[in-house]
Amino acid sequence: MAIEQTLILIKPDGLAKSLTGNIITRLSEAKLEIAASKCIRVPRQLAENHYKSLQDKPFFEELIGYIQGKYHSRKKVLAMVYYGEGAIQKVRELSGKTNPEEADSISIRGQYGRITTKGVYENVIHASSSPEEAEREIKLWFQPDDIIFDIYPTKNITEQTTKKVWA
Ligand code: UDP
Ligand code: MG
Image (cartoon, rainbow, N blue to C red; front, top):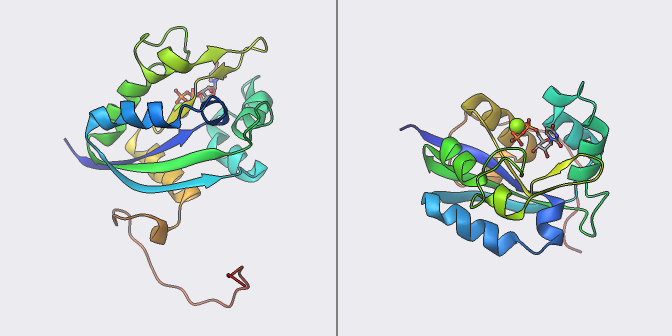
C-alpha cells in the first residue's frame, strides 16, 4: 500500500456535538499519524473551493452553509492531515458511506450522522476520497510549513507581506 496523506475535517456538527475525542479515537484504529491540525472558521471562498465539484447540485448552498457552521453553535471545523500506508482508504472506511442512514452503523457517520429535515447529510466528518482529491484539498487547507511530512514538492518565494504577530 502506498504512503499517503488524507484531509480530514471534523465538521461543525461534530464539534457542536462534542465528538472530537470520539472521532479521533475511532480514527486511531487505522494506526496512522497526525501530520497537521488546526481549528478554523471557514471563509465562504474556501468552502466553495473545497466543494467545487458539487457546485451544480441542488444542495450546494445548504452544504456551504453547513461547512461554514451556519446551522450550528460552533462556526468552525477541525482540519487535520493524517499520514500513513493506505491512509485515504482506511479513513474512508472508518468514516462510512456519505448518507449516514446507509453508512455501516458502527462507522463514524453511521454512529453520529443524521439527515436534516432540509435533506442535508450532516455526517460529522469529511475525508478525501482519492490521492488527487487529497492533494488538492490538503493544499487548500494547509501551507507546507503546517505539515510535518513533505510529500508534495515545495518552492521558496520571497515576498513583502503584512502579517499579524504577537504584540
Ligand atoms: N451531501 C448531501 N447530500 C447528498 C450528497 C452529499 O448533503 O446527496 C453532503 C454531505 O455532507 C457530504 C458532502 O455533501 O459529506 C460532500 O459530498 P460527497 O459526495 O463528496 O460525499 P463524501 O465524499 O463526503 O462522502
Ligand atoms: Mg467527497
